[in-house]
Amino acid sequence: MNYEAVIGLEVHVQIKTHSKVFTRVGAGYGHEPNTLTDPVVLALPGTLPVMNKAALDAIIKAGLLLGCEIAPVCKWDRKQYFYPDSPKNYQISQYDQPICIGGSVEIELPGSARNVMGEHKKIPLTRIHLEEDVGKLNHHVTDSLVDYNRAGTPLMEIVSDPAMHTAEEAFAYLTSIRNTMIYGGISDCDMEKGQLRCDANISIRPVGETKLGTKVELKNLNSISFVRDGIAHEIKRQLAVVAAGGKLIQETRDYDGQTGTSQSLRSKEMAHDYRYFPDPDLMPVQVDAAWKDTLRAECPELPFDKQRRFLTDYQVPYTITSVLIPDRELSDFFEATAKLVGPGHAQAVGNWIANDVLRIMANHKSWPAFEAALSLPLSAKGAALEFIRAKLPPKHLAELVNLVESGSILLTAAREVFSEACYSGEAPAAIVARLGLAAAPTDSAELETWCRDSIAANPKALAEFKTGKDSAINAFKGPIMKAAKGKANPKLVDETLRRLLAAS
Image (tube, rainbow, N blue to C red; front, side):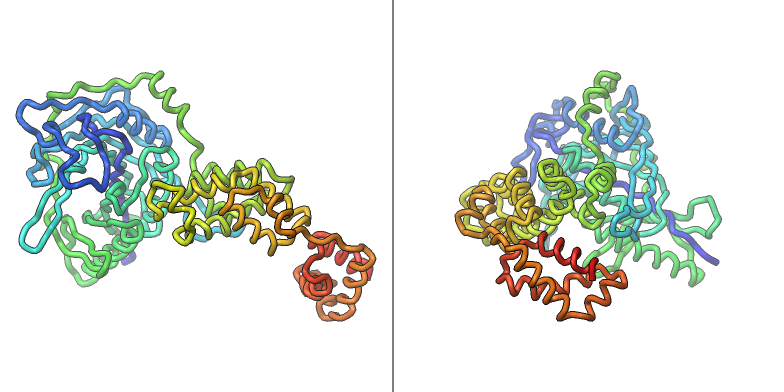
C-alpha cells in the first residue's frame, strides 16, 4: 500500500518590541540571567497584566501580510500547565477567539530555471494568535536552572493547516515565513536566539484517503535544516512502523539534529488537558477598520512579489534575484542603484551586489576600518552592509557600473576601484583618475588590424561562430587584449569583432 505524509507546522515567532507583552520591563536577548524581570513577569501576588499595543500592532501587521482575516474582537485565555519555565503556572494565550484567522503562506518548490521562478503554491493557515513566551531552562550535570529573561516576551504562533506533504515543502514554508516577518520588521527570526521556533505535526495515510492518520508532534527543531531533516526522519520512522505491522501512537517526540534520531517524550496532550478559560484580568480587544488601515499602509511589498517585479522590470536573472530577495536591505540597495544606471545595466548591478558586495560582507572582519566605524559586533551581517552602503552608496556603485558598461574602464580595473571605494568612500571616477586606471583610447585602424589578425589565427573559432555558437567570439578577444596590453575598450573590441565576423 502506498502512503503519503501529511504535515502541519506550528511556528512560534518572537515579536520585536522594546518591552514585554503584559508589562513595561524590557525584552531582549543576551542579558545576564533573570535581569529582564519584574513582579508581573515573576507572577508575584497582586500583580496585573497590562496589554502592550506594539505587540498587537505587530501581529495584526503579520496577519495582513499573510492575508488573514483580522477578527473584529479577540480575547485572552489562560492555558494551564505546571512547569518551572512558567512562574504563573499558566500561560496567557488565545484559544477560541484568535486575532488572525485563515490566510496563507506562499512557497516556492525546488526546480527553478535560470530566469523563471519555480512552481509556487500557497499553504493555508488555520490561525495566528498572540501569547506570552516562557522562560528558558538551562540544564547542567546535577541540576537545571531557569532564566526568566524570555518569559513574557510577545510571541505569535502561526498554525498551518495539515496541507504539506514533504519535508522540502515544510522547509520552503518556514523560509517564506522567516523572510516575510523580517521584511515586515516584525521579528529578526534568529533561530539561534530562540526568535523563531517550530513544532511539526506529522502523520501518514494511504494515498487517496482523506481522513488524517495518527499525529506525532516533533519538538526541538532548532534550525530550518533540522525541521526538514527531522520531518524526513519521522516520515521514514512511521512508514517503517506500519510496514512492520506496528501501530502508531499519538505522542510528542524529541528530535536530535546532531545525531538524526528521535525519542518519545510523552503522550500528546489534548486541548482539554490545558483547561483553557478566559483571563479575568484582560479585557477583549476590538480591532476597527481604521486600525487595520493604518497598519496596512505600513506593510511592505512581499518578497515573492518583489522578486517577480525584479524579473520583469529589471530583467535580472532568477539566480541573482534569489540571492537579493531574502535580504530586504540588500534588495533595496540593488533597486536604489538600478534606478541610477543606464538602460539595460540593472543586471550588472545585480552581479556586483550578489558577488562583490556579498564577498566584502563575508570578509569584513579582515577590514580594520570596520572595527573603528561600527559599534555593532563585527559578525553582524546588517552592520557590514550598513558600513558598505556608507562608503559605497547607490550613486557610487551606479557610477562604477556605468564606467564599466561604457568601456571607460576594464572589469579588472573596476574590481580594484570597487575595493578602494568600499574602504575609502571616494567616488569611483575620482579613484580612476587618481590611480590612472582608465582604459586607453584605441586607434580604430590599429584595433581593426588586431581583430583581423586574431580571426585569421583561429579558424576553428571562426567556424564555430558561423554555426551559431556566439560564445566562440571570446576565443578572439584574448589575443586582441594581449596586443593592446590589456588597455583596449572591451565594448569596441566586441563591436569591431562582430562587424568583421559578419562580413567574413
